[in-house]
Length: 366
Image 1 (cartoon, one colour):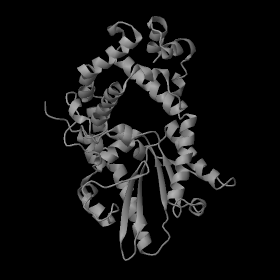
Image 2: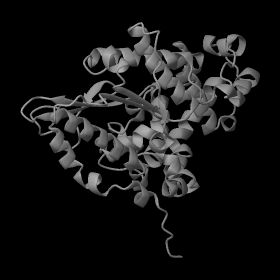
Image 3: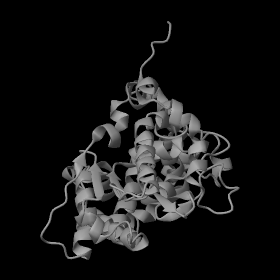
Image 4: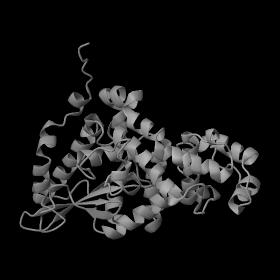
């Protein structure tokens, strides 16, 4: 970002207002110490999310359940996740004007940052330079080259001055200013819609191969979280069936996009008929694997158990507060399938998806 900004200030020419704005009025506000931190807009996003969910599920996310200790909070140890958790809690305490009590949260990286603890994922994907070869090839390919050339043309600088890294930096400057400051950034003028789609695909390639369907270990690394979620649902179902108070009415688990995407992949959401590669950009315009839709800021997956009477428990999934249907259960008469049918669908994973086994590194013969 800094390199691009210096280049635009020193070498770009043209009469466009947006260029004048960058060169004379715009200041680099994105600093190193902001990296990995939750900005004020993120604080507000999580507060608002808490309020919206409490209105959507008033019998679950209620003041009574919060005060009674029936809502549990868990987070990864990262600063932004802890602050997201604090913000979510603040949304509820401010909504109900609770000032006399503080509510604890647990830090659990084994669950919320499982990818750090999965040796096979770390070695075969995360720290393996060749794991992202499809993204690297796309970034050096004709679609991306056209984007960098168009940026160079708009700035009136030589083509070799604009790298694919600089194009990405400009794209993030545009996106961050829109998301964090709600302004139409002058940096956005470096792209048209076609360019933005190419940039989006480059990022989708990265996520597909590093966290999604590219390698099986990406999703299998989330086995530990998958089992944790279903064991909580089972316990709530059992307590409900026996007429007891459900001891954990709500569990709020705060992690990362890198926590959520492997779990969504393990559950089979947003699976395309073919892999995303460096050469099939043109045929992937209608792809369902689109991380800008799946993983916006404050992305959330909500699983809700409903007691419909007569031993009829149902499980609803919402992604980013919109109902989604479990893959393979679309034949149901309702988008909310029976809990037993969901467990039957994931039977093999519930029996055989073992974190220790999946994440163990097997030395292949030389």
